[in-house]
Image (cartoon, rainbow, N blue to C red; front, side):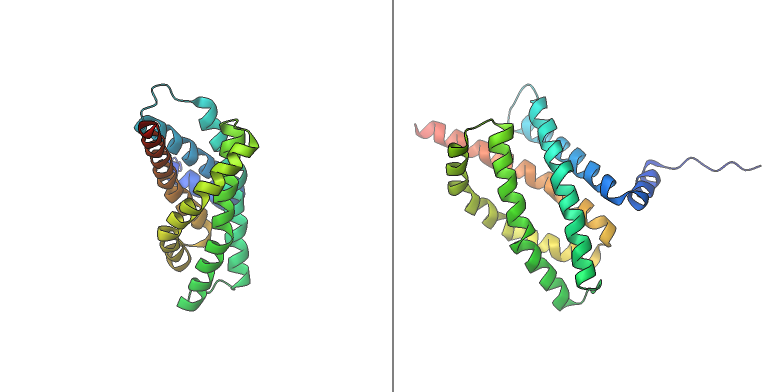
Length: 189
């Protein structure tokens, strides 16, 4: 007459990840991106949370970053037949850093400028020309380490989740960095 104990939140999440991996990763990426933006806004001194911005960032992460990561990691594992030796992991990291990483950053900068900030394309393009190289070079200082850990030690179905968690902090870093650059430019004028 034993009734099964209620599943914990983690158990329910893992069950969803198993049954609906794409959907779960997309939702996770979106939620983490939204929470990251709320934290970023608070830390950068914004008094009233810009809900539109939060929702648009969630849409980008859930609609593009999560699914793109899901398919990218799945494809790499199939292409490299699930190998985790040092040489294969290095190849995966290099491929990720030369393809998905630059694409993610470039598309996000375009989306952020055009959709979120509603900035005219010519100004967004100029901002990207000035800041994209620094953003990508900064990403290359630590995302290869994340990639190495991901490919060497993390099971395939958790890779997008780990990346989304790191992106949570990366988003806060970029927001605070942009804020400090804006303040420095304002003081210089």
